[in-house]
Image 1: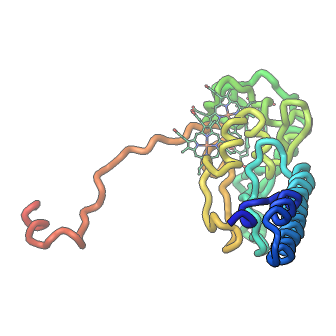
Image 2: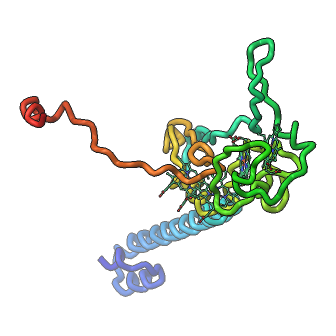
Image 3: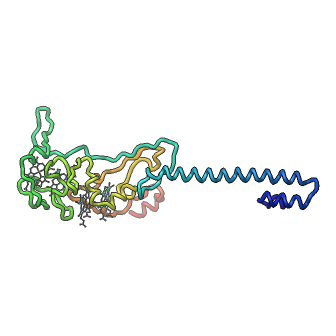
Length: 241
Ligand code: HEC
Ligand code: HEC
Ligand code: HEC
Ligand code: HEC
């Protein structure tokens, strides 16, 4: 039908006039109706598109470059907890107090008086204290990480100090690709829920898996799996003995 195909009301009127007769008013009404419908439809499309553009623009600043966009969810998201060391390590004196508890001292107790030695970079050089420390971390010297002005903290490359509890900041400054993989969930593992709308997630710290002094992850030796006692028929299993 022509009036269904035509989208131009002027052309429609022309066609109606040419045809003439009692049906003109009816056809005109149809064409007027479609004009209104079209105007409404176009207005709606413009409004939706404009709304989307606005929404994207207002979202843009919250999302940092390279960050994976979040799937919108109405449910409140559960937290992600990253395990952290309790605080600075302490040295056990080997004695106990009157409660029977081990007596420990802070690193600063001695290091407030010793002269920091920025050249120590192997455990073989430790002959006065800390002998036997297992150490293999590239060519780093001890004060690449330990803070010479306060041994109860760590030190970043730009000289700022960082708490032992925030050790991941230290690891991440030299191992950027592993830190990025970690942030995206491809390194370091996790327990709990992948879908944070269903439950919380706990993540390991770099130092849960890597000893900062000897960080190479120990090699795993593959072994034969345990015998499957359920799916192997008893007779066949017995025949293997
Ligand atoms: C009982 C005293 C004492 C305590 C407590 C102590 N240190 Fe030391 N530390 C020393 C001495 C002495 C040396 C020098 C060892 C050498 O060169 O043979 C040293 C060396 C070091 C070095 C090598 C760089 C340098 O300045 O010589 C680092 C790093 C270090 N200690 C970190 C620590 C940390 C971290 C703690 C706390 C867990 C700690 N120390 C606690 C006595 C101490
Ligand atoms: C890659 C950074 C890094 C380097 C390099 C480094 N340390 Fe440490 N060190 C740490 C961190 C992190 C801890 C805290 C570990 C913990 O809480 O068990 C630590 C803990 C210690 C401790 C106390 C706990 C322990 O293992 O006895 C001593 C002592 C120490 N370091 C000495 C040294 C000495 C000496 C050197 C150089 C031979 C050195 N560190 C090099 C990061 C480093
Ligand atoms: C100042 C820079 C620096 C810091 C800080 C640092 N590393 Fe390293 N790391 C190195 C270098 C250099 C190597 C050696 C690379 C090589 O030998 O190819 C290395 C090697 C490693 C390796 C591989 C070891 C191997 O033998 O395969 C691991 C794992 C590692 N670091 C973990 C850590 C962790 C965990 C921390 C934080 C406690 C940390 N690193 C802090 C510089 C750093
Ligand atoms: C759940 C344990 C775990 C955690 C947490 C973890 N790693 Fe690892 N990491 C590993 C394992 C396993 C390997 C060895 C992979 C291999 O040999 O292929 C490794 C390898 C590495 C290497 C050596 C890569 C190479 O190619 O030799 C570096 C560097 C490293 N991790 C840094 C980090 C840093 C930095 C963090 C914290 C942001 C971290 N890791 C957290 C388990 C972990």
